[in-house]
Image 1 (cartoon, rainbow, N blue to C red):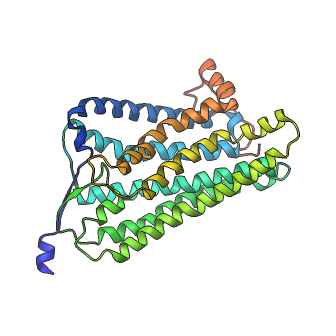
Image 2: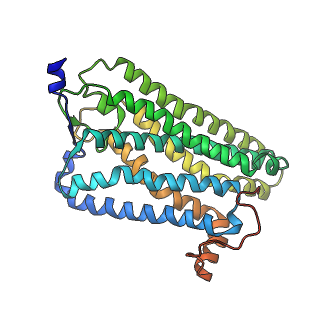
Image 3: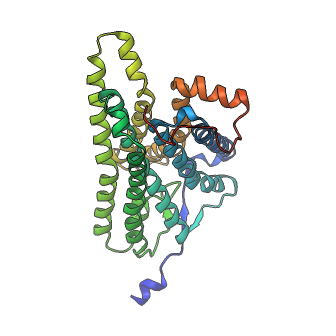
Length: 326
């Protein structure tokens, strides 16, 4: 035991993309611009929801949460990736790796729950329109939002504690561009059977139930919409949730691809490529999908804010409640 403690690692190396060493300058610019644009997009969405009375509805209340998550979600990974590219500093401390692992996993889990909550909101709006205002009230919105955050952070705090309690004797090279659970567990010299099992359970609890709820909600939505006799009515009903459905497909498709594909020994594994997709590209395109496909945001909120210069107003003059029904 004394010998194991003396060789305990206090530093890891993130290998990143060694095959792209000659293109680090180009990718540094690309990732930096992506990071800045993602922050601006999501901050604009949050500002739109905060400063417009017309958007004080459950759908936009829940939309603001993923935007807030993605501001921090992308900030957990890209700054360190840029440091790897620009300063060629691949090292990360043990505490830093555990911190990155905790926040990345927690934000991703919370977003899974929030996407499920948003799908339930759209289900009530489309399938139960008469009961929607009474069911999706302000109190329930706050409860669902809080439950999503607490569930994501609580489950991953337990997992992070178990991983941090493992022994790491070497090697110290993480085969990824950020600290994810399985690449870190792979480096441990302890018995990782229990931790690996807990990791799989936490991943399943944080992804499978939200996915099933989301899938079920949209299945009922599609069935309800197809029963509408007029084509214009079907189009109007489906337009209220089409943007959210696109985001859900992109998010879950990339995550499931990472976990379904086997590990490869190539220089750039498919897992890394798809990890870039759901950690970097998805937060970038989500605000564009929501804003470009949402008529209320595009035609009313943006025109009102930028046309009347109310973007920096502190509190809008609203006489409605903070979260009301559609």
